[in-house]
Each structure stands twice: as C-alpha cells, then as structure tokens.
Image (tube, rainbow over all chains, first blue to last red; front, side):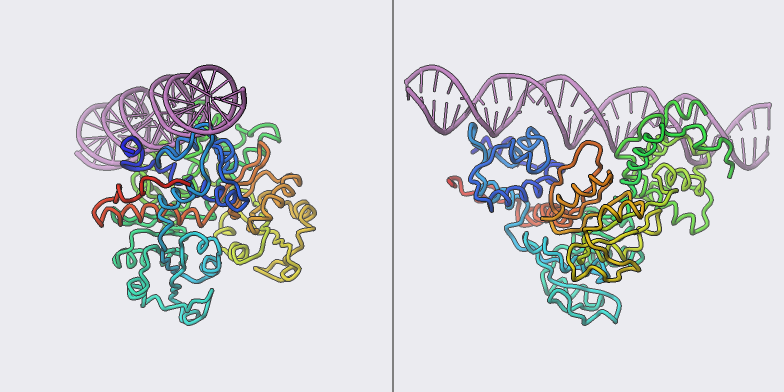
Length: 235
Length: 235
DNA sequence: CCCACTTTGTGCACCGGTTCACAAAGGGAC
DNA sequence: GTCCCTTTGTGAACCGGTGCACAAAGTGGG
C-alpha cells in the first residue's frame, strides 16, 4: 500500500500515458461487453494498438493493479482508469459556435457515453439563436458568462470561426474556465494554468499529404532533387 | 548548394517538425496578407506559438532559407514549406460516411483553402445516397473503388460509425489508398506502408478532464489519497 | 573599408518517453 | 509444500526532440 503510493501516482502521470489511457479504456469496455473477466497486458496492448511493455509501464503509473501470472481484472481496471481520468464525475460541456462543426459535435454520441454532457450551445448569429439542436436551445453569446455559471460548465469547446476564437477564449477564461478544446484554426494565447487542446482538421490532412508525396516521389524514381528548386530564385 | 542538400533535407524531416510546418504556414499566410515582406524567427515563432530556436531548427531541416541579420522572406518561405508539404499539387479527398461529422467536413472551408479538394462523398445509407451536399452528389459505398479510381482520390477521410470503419479501411487500402484520416473511434489495423492519422474528439475531452480534475483536486486541499481507494476492493 | 548590430544556423547537454529483457510474484498441479 | 508456468512490474540502455548559447554570416552607417 505504501509502496504503491511511493513509486506510482504520488506525483503526476506522464503526459504520454494520460493520452493513452482513454484508448485502454475503450478497449477494456469492448472486452467487458464481450464478457471477458481478465485480460493480459499482451492482449490489451494488441487491442489498443500499442506495445505491451508500454502498456504495463503506463498502468504501473496508476498503481499495481495486475496479478502476475494472470493479468488484469477488466472491470477493476475500467474503474481505476475511469477514476484517474475523472470520468466518474459528470462534466458539463458548453459548445460555442453552432456551425456545421458545432452541430456535429452537439450530436456526437461519443461524448455522452463517457462522463461528458453537452450542457449548453451558444452562438453569435441571431439566425441560429433559439434553434433547438440535440435537445438544447441555442443561446446567445451575450449569455456566455451567465450560462457557464448557471449550468456549472467546466469545459468549453470552441467551434467558432477563427476570427472570433481568441475573443471568446478570453471571455470564458475570465469566467473561470480553465479547460478548452479548440477547433478554430488559430493559436490561442492564454494565461498560465489554462489547458488548451487543439484539433485541426486541415493540419492533419497536410501531414498526410506530406507522407503521401514522399511515397509517390519514391515510386517515380526518388525525389527529383536537382530540378526541384531552380537555383537562383531571388525575391 | 551541395551544402544545403548535404545536411538538410537529404533524407527525412523529423516527424515533430512536419507536424509544425502547417502551423508556420498558417502564420506566414497571415503575415503575407498583412503585407509583411520579411519576418524574423522570433516573430514567426511567436505567431506560431513555439520557441524561436525550435522554429529555426525546424526550418533548417528544409534548407537554409533565411538571411542572417534580416530574417526570412515571407513569400519564399511560404513557397518552400508548401512545396515540402506537397501542397503545390492538388489532392483529391473522398469522405466516407455522411453523418453529422461527414457533412461538417464536407462543408469545412479549411480544406479547399490548402491544396485539398473534396472530390467524393460516399455513404451506405440509401436514405442519404443521392443527396447533394457541398455541391457534391452522395454516392453509394458500393461505388467506392470505382469512385476512387475515376476521381483520382489519394486521401480518404473516414467518418463512418465505429463498426464500419475497419471494413471500409480494408476496401480503400485494397483500392490502393495509402493515406487515411480516421474519425471513427476504433484502432484500425492496416498493413505496413499505409499512413493513418486519427482524430478522436472523445479522447481529447478525456485528457482535458484529467487535467481539470487535477486542478480542482488541488483547490480542495490536494488529492484525497487515502480515502480515494478503499484499500480492499476485491473483485 | 571597418565596425557595430542583428539574426540565423547549429553543437551540445538535457529530458521525456520507448523498448528490451529479466527478476519478482502469483497460480495451479501433484 | 514444492516445482513449473505465466505474466507483471521495472531497471537500464536507447532514441528523438528541445532549448540554450554562441559562432558565423549578413546589413547598414560612417
């Protein structure tokens, strides 16, 4: 018991590990549904698409929850990971910006299934304010602070146009929010202590394009180094 | 000229660098619009939200495109990064799965602005096949291989339900696709040489929740270690 | 032409994360 | 109780990436 605390979760779980816990959780939920009682690190790692040594080290950061010679108890591990991630509590999420993406997010089932609940939708366009989407009334952005307070919102999803994102971010931060998921293609500047995660669809495609280009270059006889850049391009 | 090739892009740009190039590109485009001719690593790094040494090292992997004492020529650097990322060519993208998310992606402006063109929408549901979305006819999934060939699609975006994703992935890979952007919450298993990038909205929220929990724990007098897990939980 | 100033490109030390490989621990058979 | 088998938990080497700090390279003024 003392041992567990000492070398395990005492202080901080590596960021890389935190990012993989949801993956393990999903795999475990699948196993739970299929009625599996225990699982080895080998099998779970396979299902989550990672190396088994990495999985074991990740889990060791939470504590010593496996049984040597047997594996991990599926239900118990689900509970432990859920608790560690804070999914045993209910998180109220507000989505700001109800365009195509905001609508898609509001209707996305994956949120509710975990501990997340879309508690508010907000937009600046009077045209959409008042609309009913995914069982919620779209409220006006002027109500932002009031809505956050009233509904106990603690995570905000930004799905606004790029131009509005920083401004909205400033307001929600002033209202006490410290966790933001940003879909707008801008670099937000935020004070110390505020967590921002960014999802950028266009960037993902650009990374794919880079690799795809490399692959096709290779096909067609290697990158055409010399002619690739005409030597004297003066601008 | 030989020097540039020797220590620079000869072989491979670090993955971490590739992931940041789109960021730099966006910042540069903003500067170009505002009429800036040159920019220092300090300013560009600021705009992209990274450390200036990192920016310089990243750019040095592409070649030696700056001028000491001056900075980087904005237009020239835009050209070089675009070319490196393969954005000087036109990429035909197919979106499979025209639910809420697929629709949002089809209408998302960020794609077209870079070298990406949504060339096809496909779905299995006869209800939506034939619909016109973002100027495109939704085609039936049975046409997948034919559409990929006919339209010269080289990147596929998966926005299907989780249950269908692996099956669709297998088909597009068999049809010769080697770059996939996956929005379905599953771990796809794919052969060597196929690039998968994954965007998972629910995972991002879970990571935020983890940090948010830590923060609020700290507020309320540190994590309640002892009582947090009742010692003997036997399952 | 030379000097002072700016800014790049990079060597180097450092750090977080990954992977290997194995000792420690538990289960089950006899 | 002892032995063998399985599987965890982790020490240690390794690897990619980060950031400091500075030499090299270029600009502009006098």
